[in-house]
Length: 391
Image 1 (cartoon, rainbow, N blue to C red):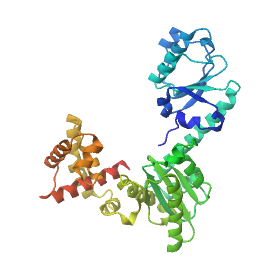
Image 2: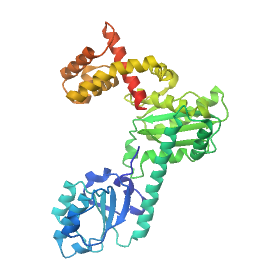
Image 3: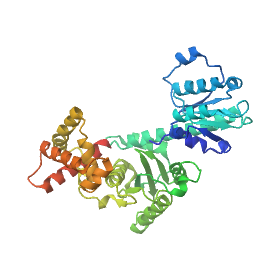
Image 4: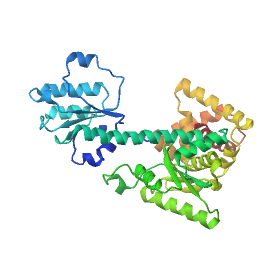
């Protein structure tokens, strides 16, 4: 799930005049809430600070640092101790910070941000809280989508959940899942809000669409009334073109057209299609273009598959747990780099011989046929089944 960060908060229009003074490495710190903190901090406060609360933006005037420069460094250490996401300081009392204080904020990865003294706290808190509330609603939407993938879900519950997301969805749908969300360089440096959020908001303006963050990517549900092949191709093309404007290198997995009440199947198809080739930047694939992954998805839960998966992965997991050998990680990277030892070694930052040693260790541990081809087929099926289990 996408997390709201300090960087996202700084892109709000109300903070257009804010200045990052130090601690820029902490701009990716997640933000959960915002609070005002203008009381004096003493040694006892520092020693008995509640460190269980995390990820707050602290608004402060640093009034007590006006005549005591050492107080500022003490305050920065306190905010770091309570796991602050960032410190927003008005420019009313402290006009400049000492170099050692700026260096301290940098070393703590604690963003120190100057805001104008005439910016009302109440207005700033309201705008940031609205943004955080919107994010919480998206988290709730993702939870609903996860519930909808339960194939045993009764129809009446499915209807209630779909109405919660969008009561105007038509009876026919196609699902799209976007993985590997590397947005364009222009979007990266635009200074605008997160491109993924903008894409979701743009899609959701259409009453027949629904989009949300979902399992480290974006899910798009496109509903429609006409089921002709020409119309279906147009629906797919319009979504792909829209996505490519912002995420030219993401992988787009597309489900088969189906009915709204088979949404669990459609979500599964889109997700598996995208994640099976997430290492292939810029790909657009439909579920029907999958090979063995399509078969395994349709046979998910079959006793023979469960037995194969258990027999194959159990010794690997036990070995990894005992020796911290990274065998499963190596298998995944090996598959995602076209079973190329050199590419896998570069991806994992280890010597190529280490990859060969690990793969030979896997060969000695799992059941497979007599040939290298049997081994490659076995680990590919293991890789795909593991993806299904994670889903």
